[in-house]
Image (cartoon, rainbow, N blue to C red):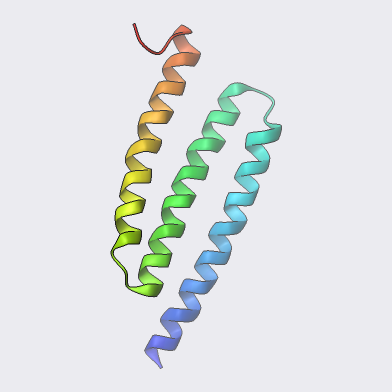
Length: 93
């Protein structure tokens, strides 16, 4: 019984995360300013990371957790680089 509850709740969480990814991708494509688009991209990579974590919980495979860790690290670096580009106009000084 508890395994069934976990499977159902993981499936519901995955559906909600996919809906959040759709909303954030709409904001990324239709955002009025570059700052809105960067925040939407930041939200999109966090949601992708969470989706991989729910896949890992559902299947029990470790590779999903490692992929989520890589996405988290690369997403943070990309967000910092884009923010620096918006502030100064260049990434590398």
